[in-house]
Image (cartoon, rainbow, N blue to C red; front, side, top):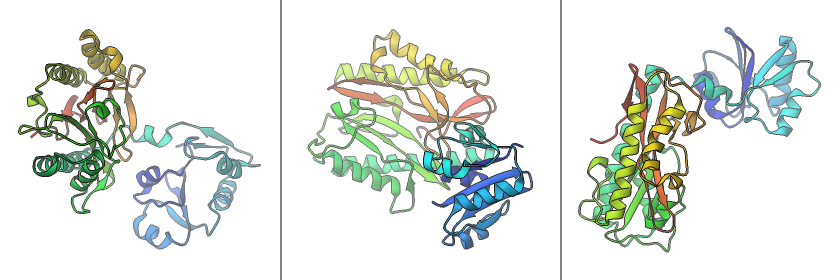
Length: 349
């Protein structure tokens, strides 16, 4: 085992089941690990951490980390350069006669294969997230029309949080018509929901820190639904055409998911459907991303994704078509590789 140091909160949690906003974790071997923090968190850290020595570093984590590294007489230590600022890394490494070996996404690479327990947690998060979509659907039917996007955004957050029981994976994206053509649209208080409008919702929650992520696109009216992606009906034929293409693209990508297939091939399966339909230039992002303790993890399902799909990976499949100044459609579900195949984690009922 190569010695390493991590700082990111989710990386900390993955290593020892506890994290806080001021800590470092060092592991030098199977039986030698240290969780460095300050007095605000020491007691709770000791209650939760069983696989590392909890060290009260007082006010200077970097100084204490340097002292421990010196005593260990290491030749090299792995770190993720994406976790450390230049100032903090310089303070940590200055005049230490060891090699600091950078490995981008060090913790995420360790976490790319989920255990069965982690998949269960992610599946539970997906189920809770789907229930939030159902609650938002009911709100739309009772008091959605006439509300502006900021109000809808607030209602979507409330539906997902469910009275404070759930933590959000990310701020929901709730976009009407042409705003839905922006993949990460910000809510517009001047844009008001009307019957016949297209509405896109992208949202997720956390369960025991593990994230969910889901997107549905619907048309506001008596049949508006975020529950069934296969039965979406749009009065406008062009919107229906675009929706049907995106749905076919998503299904093609899910069907392409198999152990041994490259992430780029999964992306290609979705992209080919959209390109053959003549809308390739309007699919402006990757087909998916890993999900776990972070909402965006490895693997990246994109044209450049060289990762080979393996048992235990969890990622989204979310193709989209975005017609500038008109509307956008995205359909997203989380996929786990279980027994060699793609399993949709709580898609439609």
